[in-house]
Amino acid sequence: MTTHLKLYDKASSLRADGSRNFVHPADVSGRFDRVRKLVFVLLIGVMAVLPWWNIGGHPAVFLDMPHRCFYLFGGTFNAQDVWLMFFLLTGVGFGLIVTTALWGRLWCGYACPQTVFLEGLFRPIERLIEGPRNERIRRNQQQLSWDKAWRKVLKHALFMLLAFAIAHIILAYFVSLPGLYHMVLSRPAEHPEAFVWAASLTLLLYVDFFWFREQLCLIICPYGRLQSVLADHDTLIIGYDEARGEPRGKVGVTGAGACVDCNRCVVVCPTGIDIRNGLQIDCIGCARCIDACDEVMHKLGRPPGLVRYDSQNGLLGKVRQHLRPRVALYAVLGLLGVIALSIALSRSTAFEANVLRLRDAPPFVVENGRVRNAFEVHLVNKRNHSTLFELRAGRAHGLHYVIAMPRIALAPLGDQRVPVFVDFAATDVHDGASASLELLADGIVARTLHAPLLAPSITP
Ligand code: SF4
Ligand code: SF4
Image (cartoon, rainbow, N blue to C red; front, side, top):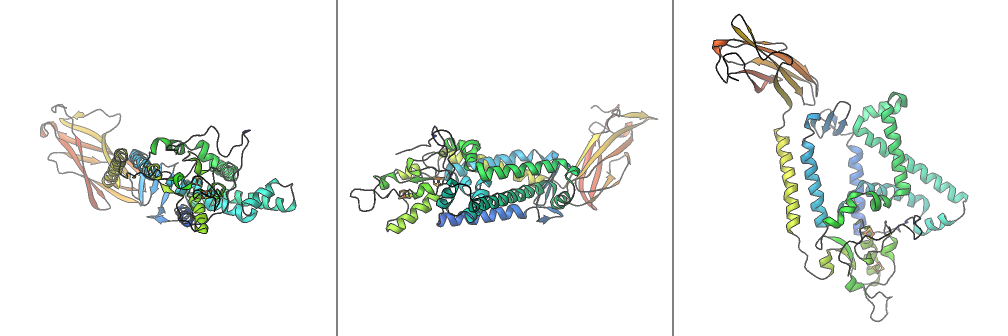
């Protein structure tokens, strides 16, 4: 019995001479196929809807790179908030690691964009135009004919159109829908970068989904390569029950196991592997072989589950341990990332206000027995809407304030530096004295800002 991931010296979709063995998976139906289709529809729907969905005057997801503004589900972030990404990526990264350690390649089989687009859009179109597996293989081997030509032309035209649509939806996340609409109606020379991005992405998606397909999972994707490190003998995988299935043999053969060697699990596999060879790194966990084998078992009146979700220990008849120390460790680390992100987000304010010493000005100026300190208040409006800020002098005794702009209207993510001068008699202040400014946002006191004062009589 194979008990660990195998990395064969050749990919399952390559022939012995190194040429591409193009995989034509056969149709399959079953409970996992239905779940996958539902997930595909949901994910494609969410992806298409997000640029249209307006929250607080902006798309739900809008990454405005030129202005360094990021609008995410009602929150507004700027370049200074990029540090939050660390916690977000930590949480997502460990979440994926925990998921993989517990449930194997669930992501690859159900939610990876490569799988979702290929199996949810491109493959059904190919099936519709070129027919089922055997018909496709037969036609591909035939000489060019009118029947073959029109099907190929139509398929590639639709593939190109779909790649174009996906590329433009992705572009909408970066330029917004109105921006995209404007770009589509104007000449490419007016927005060359966006044009090159959209054209390159369209071409990349088209080549990927008409030609490269499973090769991306088998050769390029780093997550797929990490499987052997993340999975252990208790990880849920898709496996073949060798004890029950072997020796293979047709129905009625004395001593034969449950596997009738019908090859259905192999012909439905999108990466072209035989799950009966044991768990392989080429398996993307799509569960098509489970549906295929269950269908065969059902027809034969045998119990399903010859190919099933189980751990390697489970397939060997041992008890599967759900909570393992390393999974718990991954989960705790992931949870820490999520908690840190939640705390950081809950503490983030709708504006930024910092008091700094005025650039290029001396620490203080003494004139006619009075000392003057010069500051500047840097304000950033992080709300989705324009906000009126007001700066008011605090109530400190003996300080006289001159605020260059007491009222500042700022557009979303707009910023302004406001010079503030504080004047006082040297004898009126003591060590540790500070100026204070009250900041109001839309008429509500939002924060009190403090700035330490400097004078000849004050020890810094
Ligand atoms: S589908 Fe089931 S019965 Fe048929 S070859 Fe695969 S494992 Fe054996
Ligand atoms: S072996 Fe089964 S689960 Fe793995 S990729 Fe092939 S069909 Fe999908």
